[in-house]
Length: 466
Image 1: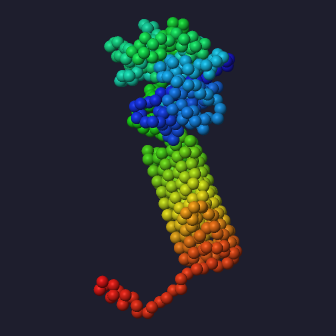
Image 2: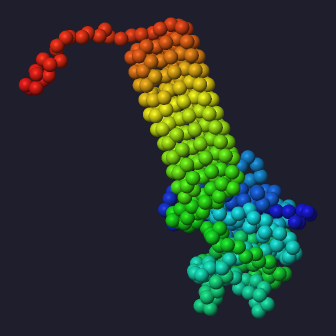
C-alpha cells in the first residue's frame, strides 16, 4: 500500500447541540457508557486510520480532556473557534494534516453507531475508483432534513443539495447523503479553498466538495444502512443510539460464549469485558470497565460499576458494587453492597445485607449477614458474625480494623478502630472491642445478666393500667 492509499480521519465535534438542551457538549453525552465522540474515533482507528484529528469548539476543554483520558496517542485536536459550517470545520482541521498525501475520511462525533466496516468499505471504494472522493449513501422513506444526492442520466453522482436549498422535485429524491466521505488530501485542500457561502445558511458547506469532485473525476458511492449512520440531535435520538449500541454489544458477547438469560433486560457498557462461560442473569447492569471472569455468574438485578469478578465467582441477586474486586469462587449477596476499594479474596463470602468499604478479605473468610465492614484488613479463614460493625470513623478520621487469620468474631459485636484482633482469637457474642486482642485470646465484654423471678406478669399488669 502506498502513502496515497493510506488513511487518516477527521472527526467533526465542534457543535453545541442546542436540541440536547444541555450545558454539556453534545459529543460528550454517553452511549453505552462512553462519550459519543469516542465511538467515532475508535471506529476510525479500527478501520486503519494512522491518525485522527478531532475538531472541537463548544466546550473544547472538556472534549479534549475526555479524549485524552481514553486515547493515549494517535489523536490530535484542532479548534473551530467560530462555527461556520462543516466545510469550515474541515478547513480548521487541515493544518494538523500538513504534508499528508493520502486519503482523509471525514466522520462526525455525534454518529456513534458508524461501524469500522463502513469506513473500511468506503476507503476501499475510494482506492479502487482512483477518483478524488468516495461517499456513503443511504435511502430513506422520509428524507426530510437530509441533503439529496443528485445523479446525472448515467447514474453518476454530480452534486449534493441540502434540504433547504432543494427544489420541489429534488425534495422527492429518497437517496440521501449521510455526510461521510473519503477524500484525496491534495484535492480536499484545493476544494476547501474554493468553498463559498452562497446558500440558505450562509455557511461553508462540505457537500459542495462533492460537485467539485464530480467535475474532476468519478465520485464513488457506497450504499449503507442509514440506521447506523444517523447522527444524534436530541435526547430521544440519544436513547435510540444507546439502545442500538447496547444491542450490538450484547450480540457480540453472546457470540463470544457468554450466556445472557434475558438480553432485552440486560445493560452492558461498551468497555465491559466478559470471558466465555460467564452467565449474566436478567436485570443486570454492568458499567464502566467491569470485567467478568470465565464461568462467573452475575445473578438477577446486580449492578456493578468498575468491578472485577474473577473466574467462578457467584454474585447472588441484587449485589451492588463499585470500584471493587471479587476473587475466584467468592460469593456475595443477596443484597450485598460493596463500596469502593473492597477486595474479596478467593472463596470468600459476603452475604445478605453486608456492606463493605475499603476492606480486604482473605481467602475463605466470611461475613454472611447483617454487618458493616469499613476500613478493614481481614485475614484468611476469619468468621464475622451477624450484626458486627467496624466502628471506623470518629467524626474526624477513618481508622483501620485488623482481623488476623482464623479470628472469630461473634454476632452483634462492635469493633472500635484502630484495633487488631490477633490470629485465632475469639470475640464473644455482643462484645465491644476497644483494644487489641492477643492471638488465641478470648475477648468478652457484657453487662451482667439479672433474672427477677415472677416479675414479668407484674410488669405487664402495671403497664396495662397506664
